[in-house]
Each structure stands twice: as C-alpha cells, then as structure tokens.
Amino acid sequence: MSEAVSAQSSAKAERQNIQNISMQNISEVSPHEPHKNIHKLPRKSSRLAFQGIKNSGRSYNEGWASWYGPGFDGNYTASGEVFDQYDMTAAHPSLPFGTLVQVTNLDNGASVTVRINDRGPFAGGRIIDLSAGAAEALGMIYTGEAYVVLQVLN
Image 1: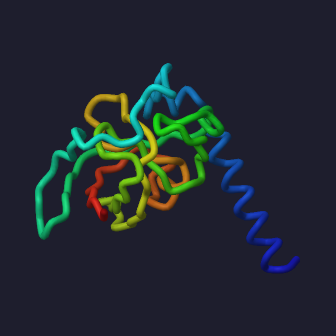
Image 2: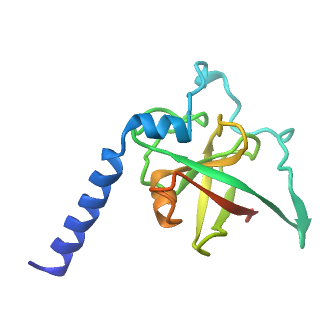
C-alpha cells in the first residue's frame, strides 16, 4: 500500500471515528442552534467587541472551549456559509465574521488558527465553539472541552 493511500485511509478512519461519537454526548458538550433568520443577520458589525486583555495591539482571552460538528455538517452558519466540520473554523458570540483567532490548549500546548464563521457557544461558561477539525488539532475531541487562550490575529 502506498504512503498516499495509507494516509487517505488513516484520515478517513479518523473522520469516521469523529462521526461515530454519539450526538447525545455532543449535545451535552456543545448545544448549537443555527439562527432561524440566517439571511437577516449582518455579515459584520462594528458594534461587536471582543472582551479581553489588550496587549501589543492584540486581544487575548482565556476560558473553556467546546466543539461541534456531527449533525451540523452541511448546515448554514450564522455567517451564511455552509458548515464543514473539518475546516478550521469556530463560533464566537461577538467577534466579527472572518476574524482569525489563534486558539491554544493550555493543557497540552497545542495551537491552531481558526476563522470565525458562526455564533455561539450556547452553553454557559464557554468562550468559543470549535469545529471538529480544530478540536482534533487541539487534542480535545474525546474530552469535549479544553481550557484555552484566544489571541485575535487580525
């Protein structure tokens, strides 16, 4: 078996593993309801502000992150784009759509850059809701949540 075929098989197995996680567990970790009037939402608002600590012109914030994916894949996000659970994207309650955010898992030091394309999280005590792909990169697929620091990059 060639390395390319082996890598594709491995990636497919990982995706299948993510999809096999029960929806009951996902909904307990990160309930996410798309906005019913998605077409009426603004794409970007200057009134939305990121609450964090200013340092060298960049914003920082830390708190609990959760993730979502199975069951929402292919649905529309609050920004109007189609959600792909394997893209490096996230939901944030106030950052403008398109904002790039570096998310670092404080438990293991893993870091990923995500693009804000949705609103959430809707579970109390969480500051960001990550796609399954971003959660996998941060090593939090099986724990469901992680304590993270967010750094706005743009």
